[in-house]
Length: 146
Image 1 (spheres, one colour):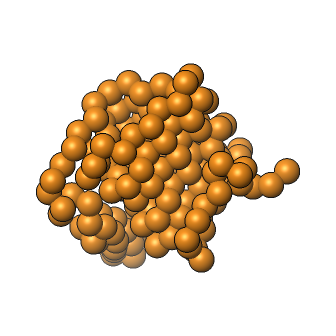
Image 2: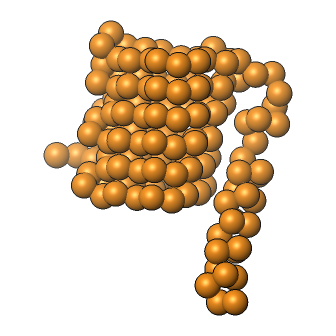
């Protein structure tokens, strides 16, 4: 069975981060490319390309990304500068902030929450989130060694 179905094909990136089915992650992910989650994740995700939440995935996170396909369960706040698609098996509970109204909910898909359109281009830049996560990791590392 292929990792990506035809519909969920990750495009345009040489860097792909995959959290496999059965894997549970608690923490932050910074990906310069595309990200696919088929397992469980709690934390923060910064994926500079596409984010795919697979059919069996359970994600509770603050997310910043470009395009998103949600086939599993997502809870949290999401900032997406591109398209957001909720498939027939997908569920989104939380707040979605977009640059343009590019949200598609397929028949059977669930969107429960708030959809906001922002013209503040700073909201969609990745620099701040990446810096915040790296500073947080530096503080944790210093506390372990100090």
